[in-house]
Image 1 (spheres, rainbow, N blue to C red):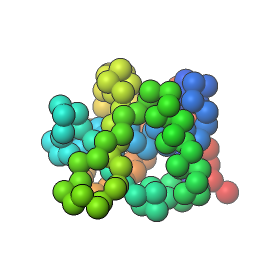
Image 2: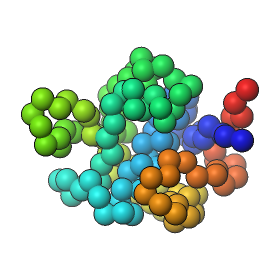
Image 3: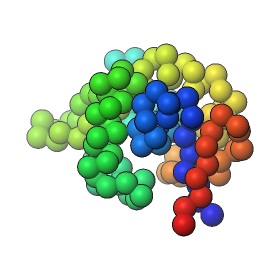
Length: 139
């Protein structure tokens, strides 16, 4: 059974959809940091196209993901860059605001979730129950 996971404090600050997207971005940024990959400008990044993000979050439309990313960017939760090798490749790269990254790195939830990840390609681990997070069971 799959669950949607996000932190309630971020849902209050950014909205539910952006909080879910932020949770997903946090996972991938921390995974890349642990693996030592996608480091640019002293930050660890993750990247994907909107169709690619939709594969990771199939319950959202591309438009909903784009809107959530814009909200997170405008409110300073994420930083957007472009570190693509080809000039015509406009795929965005994302990282967390340094304060949010530091918060995530200090939380037992993320330490356990990223620490228990077995391989770089796994996208989602089983959520660990924590009353700071909301789990929504899909229909």
